Figure 1: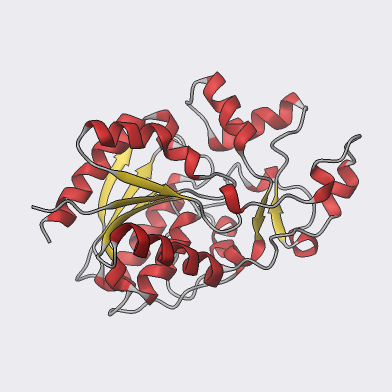
Figure 2: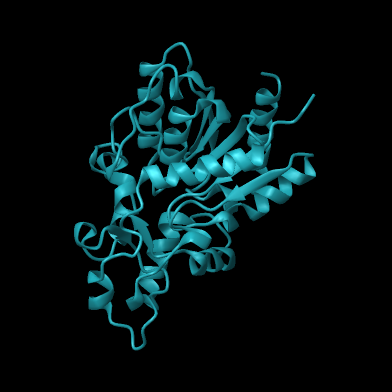
Length: 286
């Protein structure tokens, strides 16, 4: 039986590098996976000029308009669709999306459902139809997130959700680790923090996707709930699932739980690989 290709998509500030250990574990299980960079991230990232100036000026850094401010869900979805076309050769693939990568996956799955055999949302945004991701942190289920306090400057002015991963302030570094890398080995968390980009486009969280029965609602999906997540609180993850199942009761979400922080790919890469293999095997049989 042919094996369904697997594509791994990271979330805000990360890059394809985030999946390195999961890819190795998947290879050991006989599955080949490809990690791709999201628009405005990884090799597509562009930092504000003030981020590299020395001496560093925090006021200028907080105010400078972002060079990626114009990158919205359309651009991100176009890039991901092209990546899926390349990896799958036009055949559907199993896509695993983390965090804000989930919103990009949803847009692609709605527009080109033939590209996606199975959707796996790993502690990811899985927004309801016509609902911007930006709406969710203000809900009761999302208010205790540790992400929003990391933001530097006014997103409306800079056009970005900006963080300062290179800050020498120990408290700032601790806040980033607590939000993203709880439960991850400290040296590995420090290395991952050093790789984070600083700007995520505001447009990507301000825009929404209209979901339909024939598009996103027709594709099998799995949600991996990370129960120790401090960026997308567990109550918010469960809200995504409840909203999806209410909208598409004939195609319910398969739910798997992991006792990890937001970055399960670093905290428990072997367990994440187990889940992906299981879901990809389901896709193989469809």
